[in-house]
Length: 332
Image (cartoon, rainbow, N blue to C red):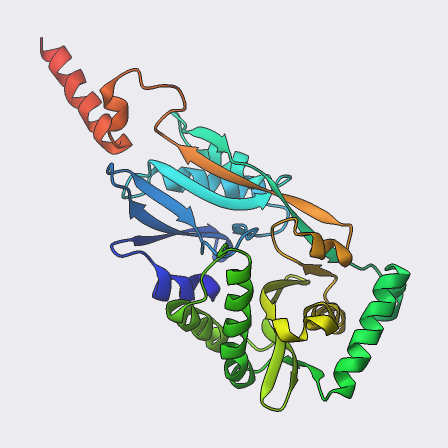
């Protein structure tokens, strides 16, 4: 639903949509949605899924990633418009999909470019409850969390997890305000939660099945001082967008809310809370575990310096020109 909402509200003007669907008989075993845009040089660039969903991979039947990846590679090679660049997004370094997609591409295959990796911290728990997880954190962390939580409750605040669309949508403006405030304090880095992005999130929340998205807040009547949007699927929760009120920073409402998100994920039956890409120090208050995400790009331009001006042309144009030259040579 998030990709569909992205396509409806954030697709670049003039961009196209191409989705590869892999079937085994009547069963769909893999899907790979792409947006297709044309660069200033006339190259067609395919980009996987929505740009905001780092770490989201092609949807595959478990255990069949290699064969599904090869099928996707073959389908991409035959796509219209002919791809010059294919961005596969940020996947875990151990994912077999990027190489499998390249292997399925008929020769001549594009060049395979690994973009820079970065960590994504994850809170894991195995056969443990919230109290057991908290007991595994440092004494100072436990003491600070309990003291801050107790003071917030004494001031009239409570933790709330909203799972129904009307409740989430009622609190989205607070999330937008808190997130944008934190983004500005960070120097303006990160996605802009503007009116267009609010429409995208609203659309996705309304379209998702109950339980797939929730909004965790620290609030009292008429006032929200911390908020985190959490996505769920495949036994994992992901804390996506969040922020807290700076005037209440002395009671760490953001930290309290994240700890309660961990509890909420446990109650929901998940085994992981993904804290998102990036090695910000605060994420390691909650975990020492992380995975590494790697960006991947398939390029038909070539990685070496240009040997001929023809390399500046899109692949489909070069291919057509080669056929014309070949016919002319046969006629001579």
